[in-house]
Length: 124
Image 1 (cartoon, rainbow, N blue to C red):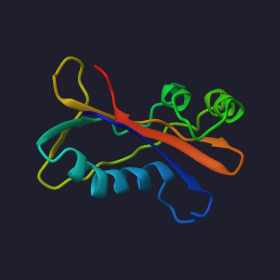
Image 2 (spheres, rainbow, N blue to C red):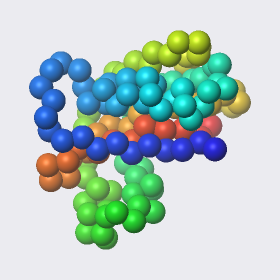
Image 3 (cartoon, rainbow, N blue to C red):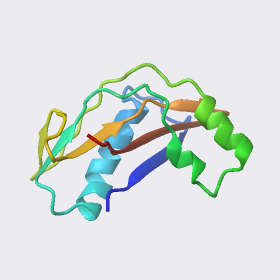
């Protein structure tokens, strides 16, 4: 089952890596190899998506309606280049109708002192 991961980080990072890149590094270094051990080839778009789809937020039980509205109405940050590194898995450019798993990263949004962004499966 493909899952969508929404990650939140506090504003505690000061080095040069983008928060989106840190999330990619964590996802591919920890979550991907556990959740998807059988994948040998994936497609990955190395630019963050600035569309504002936050449908997963509507199903979240941890936030009230006010917070959900703030998240879905927040303006996304500018596109950022991100890289995926995986051992034993080939990473190809994203193509329509290939039948491969496609993973994308959405640009971060700020809600109060929290920064949110999504990383997950993209439908063809």
